[in-house]
Image 1: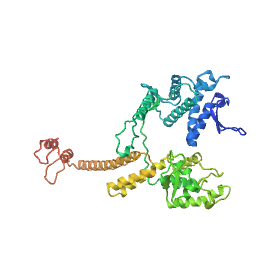
Image 2: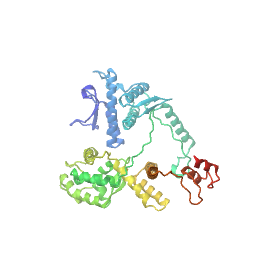
Image 3: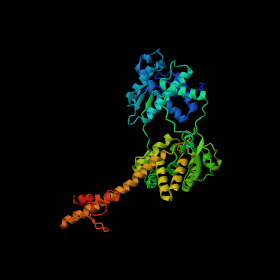
Image 4: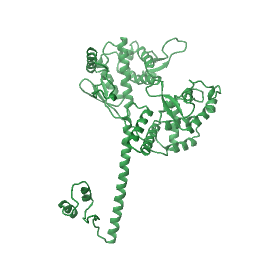
Length: 470
């Protein structure tokens, strides 16, 4: 949608203007929108820069659609008044936007609505609803919105407040962590959200291809990649780190671990704090040192080598000497995937690492205790908040083990079929197998039941006779 048609957008603060707002939200006519601009400012203070931008951008299409609903976009009328309506009207607008624009389903229940996600709207809907709820929280606190937060279920909110008040009145001590074993399992509290996304369990996709690094190496050679992008990919599949955790590395993160095979980096939700240690191969460490002293040195602008760089300098930079980020790396990754003819999200390298680590733990452990310790070490290294994340990979290996059993069944069936066909061609009448230890003739079902204790192993069993005769 072009600006002339009323699209809200973000612009940088004009040069020469002194303001605390680095980003200003304007409507299609270029008129600044104070509420959204203040929201962008507040989100940037409490969230990471990327998360704040995501929240603001998620709201712009919605506010643009509000302008199309009413004549509020006409000259002389405030466009901000379109969101400042009674809660029920706001909820109807949100419901219409989610259904019509985001292609989701909505069904009304007692006091709230359940949103059924469309095939391509999962992350978009969640981010939009979370951002809009934060926006109205800010509007309520600032006095811009005269009603209760329309994105909150009033009944559930009151119940939570009553429970909190009772705890304060009775002096009830804070709950111990669930892992302490001192507390009974706590029933999950109902959500305060008026719009509740239908829960779907996230299941990672294990990638079990030991030859993937070799294929990627061949593709990188064919694409004539430099050291920088080769190292980024190698760090992703050797350490299991998220690609953003790799790209945000600073010189000091590697230097603090001796410029060897480890580096500290931020983790998801750490807000830039270096709380995670990643490990990689000695070959990648050698390539990293060579990159810093050659390619990066040329692109730095000051021709600084490793020992001359500051700890705060980014480890990976663009050819213009700017920090190398995810948006700049993505096109290179898609080019590589096209070259090696694979369809793989960059996050799949993290799943590849976990799958290979799980396989190594299972193959190297000698006792069940060693297997359990290996899993716990993997959970700690990956920085998972819950060990349940590992269950999806365990289900994969269980299915893989059963698949091997299935292959054996298929081979046995094929062999028996070939033997039967050969006997039929030779004119030999097939006979049931004989049990050598007692001479009782039993077919496959009878043998299976006998092993389960459902029948005797003597020829006097009526069931055995019936089965044999059938």
